[in-house]
Image (cartoon, rainbow, N blue to C red; front, side, top):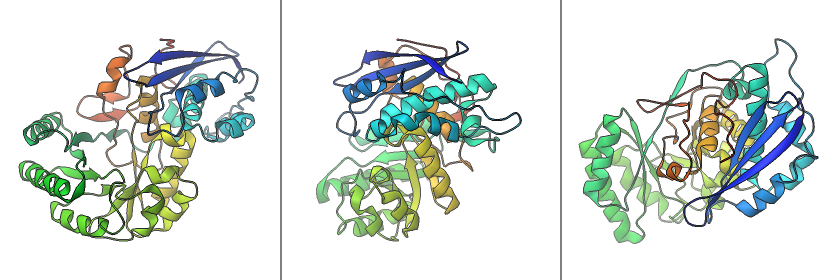
Amino acid sequence: MRVVDARLASRVLDGARRGLVLSLTDDEGRVGLGEATPLPGFSPDTADEDQRALAELPGALGAVDLPAEGAAPTATAILRALAPLSSRLRDLPAARFALETALLDLLGQRLGLSMSACLGGHVRYAEVQVNGLLTTSVPLPEMLARASALAARGVRAIKVKLRSRGEDGFARDLEALRALRREHPGVELRLDANAAWSLDEAPRRLALLAPLGPRFVEQPVAPALLHHLGARDVPWAADESLAVEGMPERLLEAEGCAAFILKPAMLGLLRAHALGGRAQARGIDAVVTHLFDGPIALAASCELALALPRAPLACGLDAHAGLEAWPAIRIPQLREGGLVAASDRPGLGIRPWTG
C-alpha cells in the first residue's frame, strides 16, 4: 500500500489552539484521517511545528507492507513506513499521532478491519467504560451536581482534578472530596494532583487521602521525580512522566506505580500502545485518555483503548466541551451509558473530512 496524496487542513479553535486534519489517499483511492491538535502550554510541540513536518509527507513516506493472508496486522508495517520520518517526528508527538492514525485508518479500510484490530490483533474485550471528570476549582454544590449527573448516565468512575494550591487549598480540596465520597460512596474515585506536590509533602497528603479510598492519585510530583516516590498509603499513577526520556523504564520497576495514563497526543499512538502492553505485562493498569482534542483524535484514542492486551480501567474518553469548536461529527466508538466500543466500520470509522 502506498500513499499517493497527502492534504492538511487547519482549524482555529478556542484561544491560541489550532487543530490539523491530515488526509492521506492510498493507491486505491481510499482516504485515511489523522489529527494533530497540540495543547499550548502542555504539549512539547506546536501546531506550526506539526504543520511544517506533516507538509513534508508526500515524498517521504515509505510503502506500507500488507500482512500475508490470514496473518494478523501489526504496527510493524506502520513503523517501517514511518522510518524515513523518524528523526523529523522525534519531538512532535501530535504529528506522529496524526500520521499513525491516518495510516492505520487506511490499513483497516484496506483489510476490512477496525483500527483496534489492526493495532491489537484479535479482539479480547468488546467495550471499555469511560470515567467522568470533575475539578475542585468549581463551587462544591456545582461539583456534587456534576457528579450526580455522571452517575445518572451510568458512569462508575470519577476523576477529580485537585486545583487548589498550598496547605489551605489542599484542606479545602480534602473537604470537598469527603463530601463527594459521602454522596457517592460506591463510585471509583481517582485524583489528579497535576505534579503540584513536592516529594516531601506528597507522602503526608497521600496518607490524608487514604481514608477516601481513591484508586490512585495521578502524577503527584514533578515528572522527573515520580520514580522516587515509592509505595505509599495511596497508589499513584504516571501521566506526564511517561513523556520523559527513560522514565517509563524506571516506572515499570518502581514500587507504588498503579497505572500508566496513556495520552497518544503526547506519546504517539504506537508508543502509547507499546507502553500500555508493557505496563499490563508487569501488573500495572492502563488508562487511555484524550488531550481535549478533536473528533478524529478522540476516535483514535478510543480505538487504542480497545486494542490493549487486556481491558484498561475506565478511560478518560468521554465527550468534552472542546468538541464544540469542531464540526458536528459522530464519533462511532462513543456509546450510551458511558461506554466505548468498536466502530462497525473498517478503519477509524469516520468519513473523510477536510473541515
